[in-house]
Image (cartoon, rainbow, N blue to C red; front, side, top):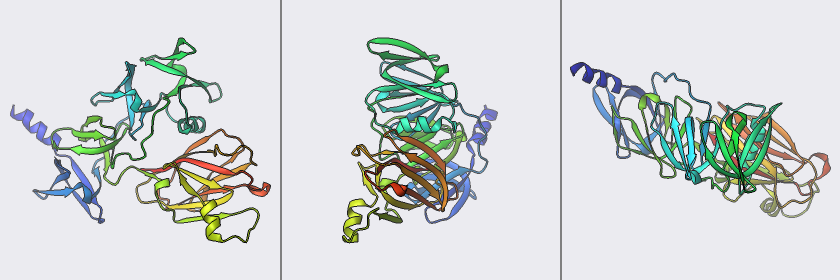
Length: 379
């Protein structure tokens, strides 16, 4: 009995490094979570930090683990690395590796990707993920890294197949031939949880709250969307209290400009009010003609993700090029010549400035209204 107790005590003593919002760094042992506060042991004494004073927590020795490739993307911001899952009666049952199972209403699930991300398939998959749709969609992987999309109603998911109702008939699509499934009508949250927990298996948990827990007990997360999950501290790669996502539509740009193709003597403030890049629908950006918008990249952000398409208000337009720069280095460039969206996820680690540029070239800016779909920085 004594040996078992000693072992539990040793397992509960996990050295961690804590960063505060005022730039300080403290190293100690994790002692537990109180009501809106973190407790760590430093030199034999317990120190308490309110969540509003914390920036991040990382283990001194990062956990070493390999996670499953399957990912479940929740509408409220979490992305779960799933070892097993099943869908029955409007509930998706998700089994992460070496963690408790989650039961999630399917209306809170945005998509499931069965395969690991690849550069060849990402543009088509991410674009479809960002596009608006009413019905459910399955993505079939064809030869040459091509995706075909079929819309219907997803009725079930088992270990090997996805059930899809199509024109009154139900088919069973083999998961081995699918890239993933996207659920229609799911409303993506524009306000994910303020706390982001990344685990060693690749999950990113967007938490609205961290409920009280002892040093030798798992963390108790209340996810954005009202779902709860327990997570052993030894699986944690990082915790950030400053949020894991920044929607650029809600952030004031550092620089914003627009130059009309045909010069005008109209008041510049009036022209900017009409044509300068501006937020749309709370999550998107709309950019007209020849324009740029630039944002600062705060510490900790690793990825810039978005979709791009011509705004649906446009019926006829010339070809437009969209470019993305990180610290003045171009990292993405594509020509937009139809209404089909494109998607991307770009690394921004150690970058300080992010710029989006819309360039109609020498063809004029007739109808060149480009919508940047949910541009966001991710930690």
